[in-house]
Amino acid sequence: MDKEDQERYDQRAQGQEAVPPPKTDRLERDQQKQFANWLLLQRSKGRKLPFVWHAMHKPSTASPGCPDFGVGCWQGWLWIEFKRDYSCTLSGEQQEFFNDCKDRGIDCYLVYSADEAIKVVNERDALA
Image (cartoon, rainbow, N blue to C red; front, side):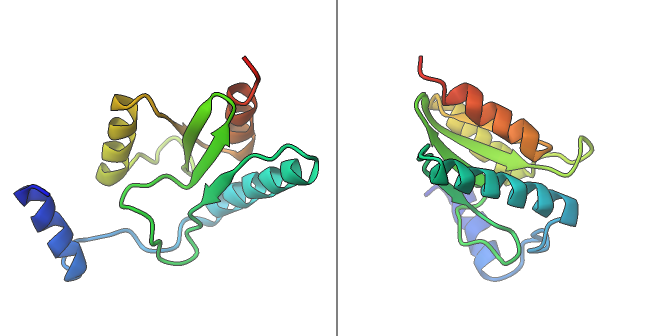
């Protein structure tokens, strides 16, 4: 770990770094719940999409900047970050995560609704 990372993570461990509150906007949480329910429904129909959800109703134990959802599709693993509306932007840590994934050929998507996330998964999960 380089010196810059050591300082950043040491500040977080000591509670000195400003972090967003653990709870997200209700509209954003509702969209996440709708998407999670859709993923569970797909499993009940035999479409076994592996996924992880970093729900934000409590402090996350995920890596800093990790998107809300990870979904395994036929065309590879993808990350999905929900935002309430177009005025909301990625945090610095989220942008760093997105950039690191892009450098390695891993797709990350910024979405504003469950419908948009469902469309991404359906397109990426189509057998090529």
